[in-house]
Amino acid sequence: MVFILKPNATKQQIDSFIKSFEAQGFSTILSTGTEHTAICLIGNTASVDMDHVVATTDYIEYGFRITEQYKAVNRTVHPEDTVISVGGVVIGPDTFTVISGPCSVESEEQIVQVAKSVKASGAKLLRGGAFKPRTSPYSFQGMKEEGLRFLSIAKQETGLPLVSEIMNQTQAPLFEDIDIIQVGARNMQNFDLLKEVGMMGKPVLLKRGLANTLEEMLMSAEYIMSSGCHQVILCERGIRTFETMMRNTLDLSAVVILKQKSHLPIIVDPSHAAGIRSLVPPLSKAALAVGADGLMIETHNDPAKAKCDGAQSLDLEQFANLMAELKKRSGLENKII
Image 1 (cartoon, rainbow, N blue to C red):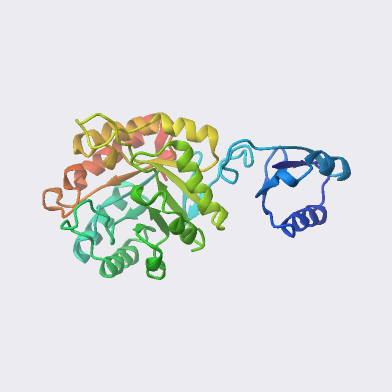
Image 2 (image 1 turned 90 degrees about the vertical axis):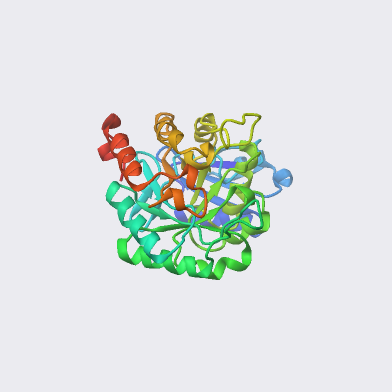
C-alpha cells in the first residue's frame, strides 16, 4: 500500500505517520522523488482502511494498493532509478559500469596482474571467485579464505572495489573487505542467505537463477531489501533453454522488462550466458544497446590454463579491445566511468 503525500507535508508529520504504522508491525519505505513523496507500507495491509487514512490525514493526497507481491523493488513505490555508489564507483542511470576479473582467484600474481590490466582498460570493479559453486564435486572449488586475501591485495594494489560470491551464511564474517556481495544463480532462491546478505550493510549483486522467472528474481531482491539493504544490483546471466549450441540463452528482453518493473540497476553477464569466448563481445554490445547499466565480464591472463571457465574468459588483450569498442559507441567515453 502506498500513500502519496501533499507537497506541504512536514518532516514531523511524515515521521509521525511512519512511526504510527511501524508500531502496528508494518515496515515502511519513504521515497522522495522530484514529483512527489511517497510512503509504502509493507506487510499484511488487508486490515488497513486506506480510504479512512486518506480522509482523516490532511497531509495525504491519496493512496493505492500495489497488486504485485514485490513492493520495495517496485518502480511504483520508487519511480526514480536507484543509484549504487561504492568506493567512488557509480552504478545506475547515465553510466555504463564494467566489472571484470577471473572466474576464480588462482594466485596472488594472477589476480594482481588481471586487476592492473582490466583497470587500465577501463573496468571499475574487480570480480574474482574465492568460493566456487561447481556442478561436479571434483572440480576446483576455489581458494576460499586465501582467495579473499589475494583479492584484498589486488584491491590495495589498484584501488578497484571488489565483487565476490558468497555461498552460505557462515561465510559472512569473511567478506569484510569485499565491497559488493554477489549472490550467484544457484543461490538466487536461498532465502536464508538472501536475508543474511541483506543485513551485511553492503551492496548486493543478485544473479538470475538458471530457470527462474523475472518475478521470482524480483521477489528474491525483495528478500534482500526487506532485510535492510537498499543497494541491490540485478544481473541477467542467461537462462537454461532447449538450445544446446551455447551454455545458456541470454535473455536481453529481461533488461527492458526489469527496467520497467523495478528501480534497481541492471547489469548483464555475457560470459556465463554464452560460455563461448567469441560471443562475449557482441553480446556485450547488445546489452549496451538495450539499456543495461553495465557488464560483468570474465577476464583471465591465460584462459587456456584457467582452473575455471577458461572457454568463456577473454584474455587481457581481448578485454582491452572490447572496452575500446564500447567506448567508441554513442559518446560512451563519458558514460563508461
